[in-house]
Image (tube, rainbow, N blue to C red; front, side, top):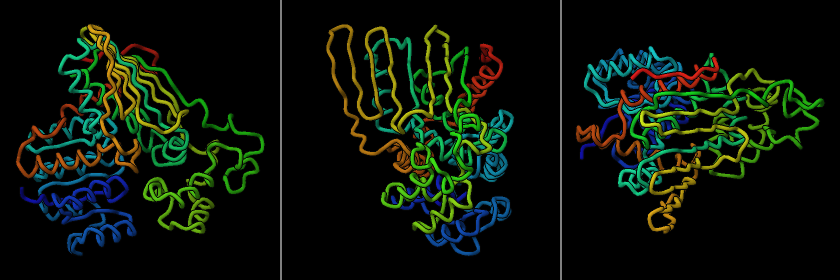
Length: 417
């Protein structure tokens, strides 16, 4: 199988992860790079051995030089997805696009149209579809092991410290500079649930909000920064405890620590916490995205699904109960309990997941499998190797936007078929 050449557009943590997997397997090779941050740009160019004449400060410079590779990995910030994706699709690149697809319906539709008219493969990084655990569940449903799927209960345990890191202090803390949290964090989950049902829901309602991470919840003695705070030692959201603790844990140095500082020493971490956004008190940030949300969906046959996203959990694998006419599935991201109503028999299926749920762990193997399948699809010209396409991702994003409309207005939203 021929090696796929890649243009990496955005060399942040997600872009690095996908590019590293491609080069580690030998199935892909980065031959061009666009990254505005000079430190990350230099580090990525060195790591992936990109020649100087193919290292660019932004995607537009890269695009100006024409078609440089078979495919592009686009991992820019959320609000910067549509322009590079449409432009590179028009140039003939196949595209691996970090989620969300876009932050507005209009821009996501432009991406889907560009993929269609150029007849290129475009895979949004809905990595949950690609985990071994998901493939076992999907197989059980497709084989009719629990009959017709009637109801699903699904929990995304965001994790208390992950909420503080990404959605209170971090890049995804505000809807106006990023997008609503349901899109930036949980479009994975909405897409995954649609994958299991095999279609989009018809009616959607939603409730939730920002309950805890705001000034009114701050302890009286709290300071604006953790390093200056008298109650930091007793705070579950202590930046000092979180990020200094990463220094002794190799699994957490790439993420979340590298988002805070590239200086992985105690002095470097303390310096970043003293001056940067990740040292702020969680009750003194400018965040506005929700910290808990419930989405309820109804499908065309009357089947229902409830999805809960909450900050107030450990950071673990998603948990899902699937209730069918002939059986019951209870999954925790690694094992699945199957109860057969016809025989009363029970079995526990171990999907052999040996890694965790976070970005640092490759999302339960989903990151690696997605990259592998994308590169194989490009190398062979077979889009059937991908588990979704641009039109499917657009449909999933429209469910998210409908849920946000429902949450904001208090109405039940009906999707157009």
